[in-house]
Length: 145
Image (tube, rainbow, N blue to C red; front, side, top):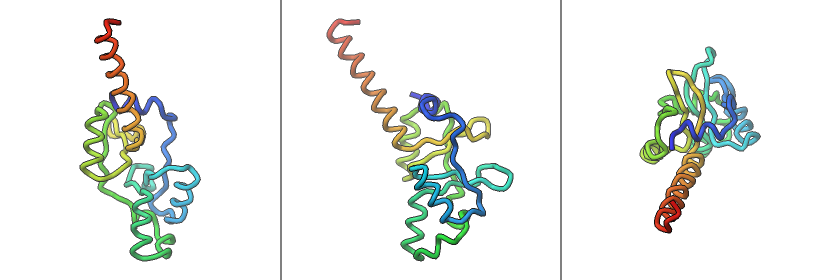
């Protein structure tokens, strides 16, 4: 299964983002309100500048306390963001996420941000793929094909 198949199940144009100068508290409120684990961070020109996850915020809360909520997003975001393309497979993306120990990945096609997928999206797609393969194999063994 390809990343584009995962994106086809998500709302088109629904990329949640903040800007680099937003307060961390604003990003945390957005994460909570939208019930998501990460937001894309954009610069003033609307280009992707990084990603900020719940883990980034919690890690800083543990280090410096609640005062970090008044910091700007650019202070906590990950700026060296790994991305995939819509033609990558679920296996490739799962491996990248596992190796990099992150749970959210922007999808870039021709240098343009087209979506964001989570490890949950990838695992659900992979389960669906494995179930289809199992059903097909069972049908083949039973002589239904």
